[in-house]
Length: 354
Image (tube, rainbow, N blue to C red; front, top):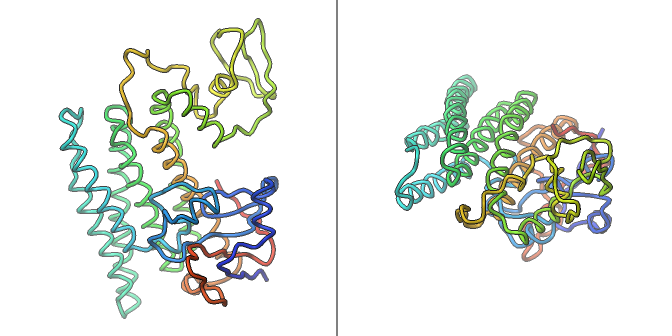
């Protein structure tokens, strides 16, 4: 039977593996770069440490609205994040005089009410009442998901400056719903919920990045490709000076100049679409403040969300209850300044992340 060990100190073999590329961090998990087997799970020492210095430096993370582990982001944390999003959206609507579409922010009041309902369900003494109230909250989360999907799709077409906030809200509805299932010990349903959310959100995150990417300058684009290297060989095939295929993966690229920079090659073959090839003309390009940081934060959030699947699968494979999983803690005294906890299985876990 698989077991896990919790520690505040990153083991030398994991630290070395991250440095030499044998291991990579994906959201809140560390896994083998080749086999994709999970070798460690990350958890903040406290729920409010999503942007802690050691998280940003030790494991190469960027700031995100989500915690590293689904076990850390409880209903109180989600309520706090939802309130922060709502306040930012109110400020945007005040600052931007002409939004193409006015969004009804009352949906956030309904979402908060559902979160309160879910949180209160956990305090119910009778099991039947607890279950009934939890499912009432789940139904409200489902309603919020449909609303936010519509808001995201509209924002991606009309008001890109608010699309990230609605995407984050959509992430949180799935997190809250899966957390309810976990509290009810419905592990498989919780996994299905995260997988469903990953599919729904992934295509919208790609579209979000595609929309913002043309506003990056050359230096920012180079940084993007450095931080998100393409999993392909740099060798490319040309016909009459035009890229037609890369490592056997064929692409359709319009005729381009004969000499291409590394960035231009990467743009032509990026899986997020032909990013940058359709950049607006310089004189027409509007400003998009902090475009690169917004892209980085969105991609980090997506990875953390998708990695929740692995954490929940680990709970199931190890055979531990969710509530016992929450109680996992290192046996050693917490060192001053320790902000991360590493949960290490007795052997690498072969877990799928969709």
